[in-house]
Image 1 (tube, rainbow, N blue to C red):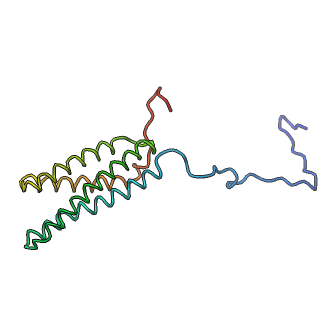
Image 2 (image 1 turned 120 degrees about the vertical axis):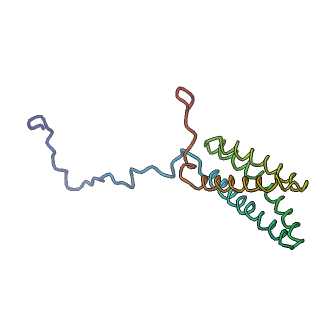
Image 3 (image 1 turned 30 degrees about the vertical axis):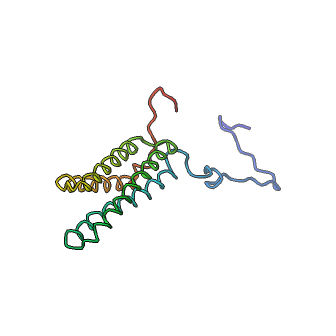
Length: 167
């Protein structure tokens, strides 16, 4: 039945029930599928551990320079820990980029950082303090900045798709 071009609603029969749509029934189930999730958390945890370890390096070196000769052994062990964590961070960055479908630059950054840390260890064993100290400061700064970025919202975004490419 129509009145002036509009449909007229008829009353529902008394025994029927009508369910109104609600926000809970219309919402999609589960978290959104775009962007990294688990791989980002793995990268965050590893980056945080790596940062903690690398920040402790000058503390142990400072103890050695103030006369605690045994602190150099702790500095050396922690250097190996930093190195191990850099390799784990490479794996985390690879998973972040590949499985998380995120950007690739954290992987390349982490690879370069791991290489520089190996050079840093070599400078330390060679007692090349003129190179060891400034490179150490640079590595700490870069790792701290990377860790800050990993915890920011922009790290959650997935890799942008190229126009005309596969989606």
